[in-house]
Amino acid sequence: MKILLASSSTVACEIFSALIEDSDQFEVIGFLTNKDKAAGRGQREVANDFAKWATTMKLPTYKVEDNSEILEVLS
View 1: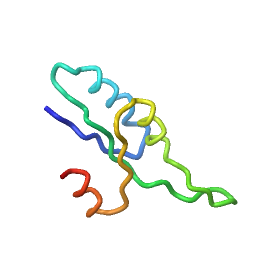
View 2: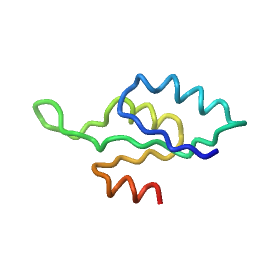
View 3: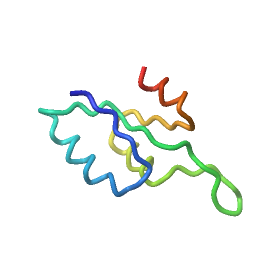
View 4: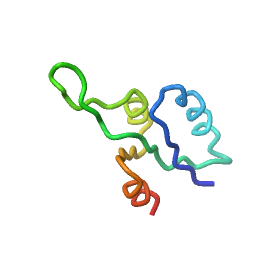
């Protein structure tokens, strides 16, 4: 079964790691998360902690802003 995992919280990282390791039942094809947001005094674009973790997993990470972008990723 192919799975696209969606989150913006690091709470999901442990659960998603277990799914990735269980490659006999699941094929994780990537991650879906929020676009980078402006933060700090300089208002630099910063990725959420989940997005940072997802990029270390060497799978595609899709950063979306609205439903139309989600549908585009799913297609």
